[in-house]
Every structure is written in C-alpha cells, then in structure tokens.
Length: 456
Ligand code: ATP
Ligand code: MG
Image 1: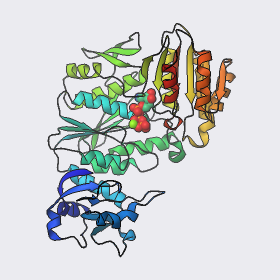
Image 2: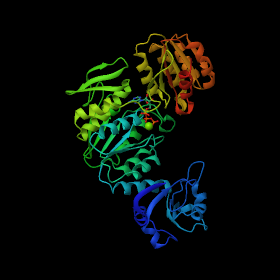
Image 3: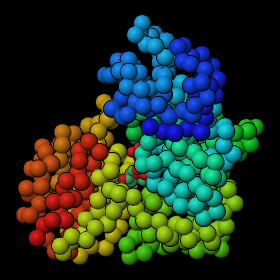
C-alpha cells in the first residue's frame, strides 16, 4: 500500500472521472493506493491491473467486502457486483496519468535515465552525486517500467529536492509515456545496445525507442548522451532542449590523464578535479561520466561530485570483485546482453592475473532471431580477451563454444545446466585464477558464484 498526499476527490479530478456509489465524505479521505489483492483491503483504493496472463479485476468485489473504500476499474470490466468504483479506460494508463498529476504537486528537479546498459548503475551514481546537495529520491532497485515509474513518483515527499527516475523498455513506445508522466528537467541516455531486439528490431529501433525519453522533457531541459555511441553522437539540440555529451573518446564531459588502478578502477581528471572510482571497468567509467554531467547540470561543486563517486561501491551482483579461497571471482550475474558481456570480458581481459582467466558464461536471453549469432560473436571474443578457459552454460551457450573454437580456443566446455557446471568447478579452478561469472537474470548464475565462494 502506498500513502499518497492526495484526497480521493483530488485523485478523481486528475483522472477526469467520477465515482459511482462512493459517499461524499469518503472523497475527503487521503488515497491509500493498493494494487495487490493479497494486501489488507482496509481503507484502500484498490487499483486492479490487467496483465497478459492475469486480470486483478476479479478481486474487486472481495476487496470491497474486506474494507476497500473504492476501486479504480477498467470501464469494460465493470460488473453488477461492483458497488464503489470509478471507471477509467485502462487502469495501467490511468496509473501514469495519476502519477503525472501527482508529481506536479512537488517542486523538485527530476532526472530521467534510460539506455540499454548501465541505467541502474548510472541512477545510483547520480543519486550519490545529487545527494551531496539535495535531498534526493530515486527509483528503488530496478522498478523502471509502467508500474515502477509511477510507484517511484508516488513515493515523492515534499522534503525531496531532486529525484532520479530509471526508465526501462522492452518494446516500442514504452519510454514515451514514462517520460510524459515524469516531466524530467534532465534526461540521460547511457548507450544504445543490442537489448530487447525481439521487439525493437535492430539498433536503430532501440535508438528510436530510447530517444523518446525527450517526449516529456521540460522546456529548456537538458538531454545528456554518450558521444562515443555511434547513434547518440548525432543527436542535436532542438528549440526544446539542449544537448550535453559525455564519453571516454569524445564529449564535453571527458576524462583527462586517464589511468587505471590495480583493481582496474578509473583514475582521471575532469578539468582540474581529480576523480578516482571505486568500481572497476570501462562501463563504470561511462556511468560515472554521465553522473558527473548530471551533477554539473544541477550545479553540484565538482569536488563534491568526486567525493560522492569515490564513495560509490557496486550494487549487488554487478561486477562485484569477490575474494574466494585463493582465487578471485568477478560476479556480474545481475543480467547480460552482448554489450554488457563484451564490457565485462574487456575489463577482465585487462586485469593482471597470476593464474588462469576463466569465463563462466550463461545464456543471454531475449535476443530474438539474432541470438545464435550474438552468442557466437561473444564466444569469439573470449580468446581475444586473453581468457584461458571458457565454461558455457545454457541453450544458446552452445554458440559461445562455436565462436570460441572458431578462434582456435581449445580449453572450452559446454554444460546444459548450472548444477552441471557447478559440479565441475573443483576440477578446473586453481590458486591465482580469476573467474568472470555472467549471464542473464533468468540463468541464476549467482549460484555459480555462491558455489565458488564456498569451495575449500
Ligand atoms: P536493466 O535493463 O536490467 O535495468 P541496467 O540498464 O539498469 O539493466 P545495470 O543494472 O546498471 O544496467 O548494469 C547491468 C549490467 O550492464 C552490468 O552487469 C554491467 O556490467 C553492465 N554495464 C553497466 N554500465 C554499462 C555501460 N555503460 N555500458 C555497457 N555495459 C554496462
Ligand atoms: Mg536497471
């Protein structure tokens, strides 16, 4: 349940609908929003959502009986048993409509972040940076879709001075309504990569989707993009917004005198300010540069930005360096697609290793008809990045093997399931080795990491 600082009457005004069967005194009550019929119904406004497999409208009557004040329901789902409700065309769209009306009640700077990779990392880094000066709210975890974005906005408090909102997409025209509801002052696109190709088609399709983050951008807003990206570098300012670029090779916010620490964290200058990150790899550098650009746009002193980033450590399962018994494990099991896997391989390829470099790669899921090819390309990259061994697990993982072998790699093994690869680890891992464990969320590669950490 979410307590909104809004009465039911005000909610109905924003939704442009009228309640049926709801007593006038109820309209003066504050909204306690509930979307989950398993939660207590007492005093809530029940908000059923119709999903692909499941329609929560079936619980409206029960929630009423259990004490819900009313429900907001799809017009087409109205049942003679419903006693207290307000009809809308579509409760999913109405949620964003309410969120838009709600966020307008708060005076604060809003930053929207999208991109194929690094949204959550950039969001967390940006939150750390903005928190140096502002009381900053941000998306919790990865709640970045048509439900997560309104939830993030409903969590706003009048004490908040800034908000960072992550926006994800899995198909065409999903980002636009999120941006229109949020009305950000600043929008960030981290990169354009091969993710969700099943529904977005190709990289141009991904670009066309992500650029819609500008749809709700405020007049005179700022769009921050990665200038090292072949599509984003061509984005031009319009009458409506200006463009600020970041990048390692190109961009307004660009690292100078770049060096890498022993743990492969970036050490660099932007202007006269010295930055040292505490998270490894190129990809974290990119995410930090985006956060620096946001910080500068919102007038955070550069010294404070550097301090915030120095204190930033990785969020769980994203390129976490773990010391096991005599060897190191880089756990990057949170998710995987071709660009993030390539980045991770590169990061490890550049690290100093005493023993063997071992890649344990699970399937990258949801890649559509190009999936086989993309797995093969990543497989080919494994020997190129100086790995000594590849353990591939899953279905399309067979293609990793094919790719690696096509580049002459010999030490390659294929497993159908995670338990199979786990049962082999004892035979292959030795002192001084370093292992990269990565795969899509659905592959649960963190089980491999757990097994490695418990090896004696
Ligand atoms: P999701 O789509 O699941 O929300 P996300 O875009 O929020 O993902 P993160 O969770 O920040 O991305 O990072 C996911 C993976 O992407 C990490 O494993 C990391 O290795 C990689 N990654 C992070 N930043 C970048 C980047 N700038 N470029 C490429 N890969 C990146
Ligand atoms: Mg995310």
